[in-house]
Length: 341
Image 1 (spheres, rainbow, N blue to C red):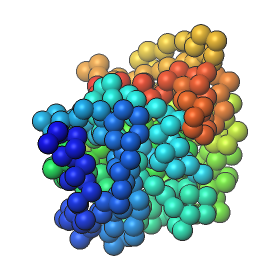
Image 2: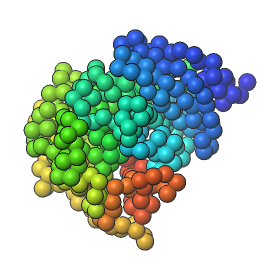
Image 3: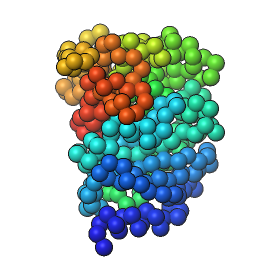
């Protein structure tokens, strides 16, 4: 039996997989072709609830391949299929050889299908949506009959509400995620209620120094430096660009505390600054901050003239701007350069 057919048989016959995380489970519901590889659909359940998720396996994948895992969190009014089409992450996975996981928020839990990044229960380890997303991640890692995941190369990224949740995942599960990507998102605990969320999107959140300490506290005994790459359009009218600045500054404080003093960056004094221009598209500025040993820890792309959209994305998906530099390529490059110690 060919490898791909054998994998599909396993996927279709998998009814319940016990992953050992708070008595959680996931079930296989279907599979479908997506691009050159295969997209399979599951449902994860734990004490906090159930969420669907999709897993993209690149073309001609073999179990003998030990590969990275990238978790992609969609924004409001999006689905896994939508963000997959917009980011073109699956096509990159075919080229670079990694597994992509797309957790899905549903209208039952948020009428706009946004991740609830602004609720305290969804901002802490072992609670709410973070426990579900972490559970999905670990269930894929532990499903060794389907994939062989390099546990040192597990990453999470997202856009908008998904980006805000990526920040939360980095703070609450630094033992799982080696690095995080944040596209048009907000700092950790930028809002702690639905009533203040709109104000944060328009004007920014609390002091990033204060929130950096909060994120470090959320890490607890698992505290470690979490490398972070941030993208934001400076013409974003949905999530004010000040939020991008705050995400970078928050993680500077968090990583400074977690580093034991080896990372003490200043937002106003990056280690390097590069200006670029997409042919026929947007100009952009990339700033990077290194630790005392010259290792990059933070990276910040500001795309000039871009609104609330995935930079360099495909018009096949929503909330994309094909005229920006490729956030998908930049995030992947950043991720592979930052394995978990």
